[in-house]
Length: 166
Image 1 (tube, rainbow, N blue to C red):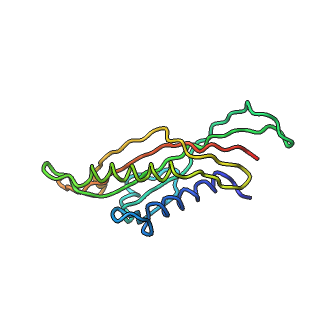
Image 2: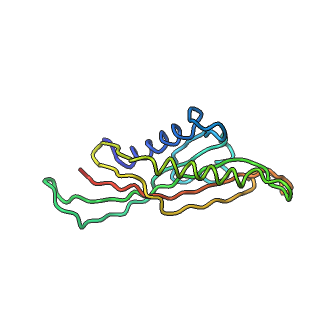
Image 3: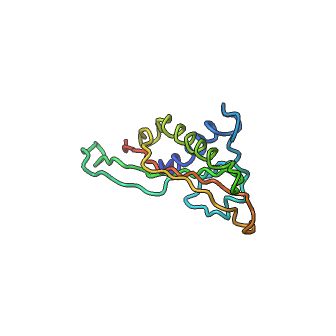
């Protein structure tokens, strides 16, 4: 049985692979790894080939004030999803090769989400993504010593995909 939530997760992997992966139009920071996990900690990220994106839906809210259909109440649902983009770089007191790149990577993720209609065409009808939150952070690689200048940049976007059960 096709489940919209799983189909949405698969769609997100394909979306980021197509829009930002090795076959994309970008000449730098092409995504090498795209995964779908509800949660993955920094120790997992450090094992992936970077740049990487992990994305999935993890929460649903319902609007039950919809009309009745021939098979019962028609619910409008909002699937809350996230996308974490991870890049690598160096940060010292005189060198920062990660912050500007991380902001650009975030904007690329935002563009991919905003440009997709999420019309997945199974038992539910999706409508375009609505970005509701975002942030960036720069963290030390989990296995590096304290003197290391190598860093992971993490860009996080939270967005909703609205769906109506057909």
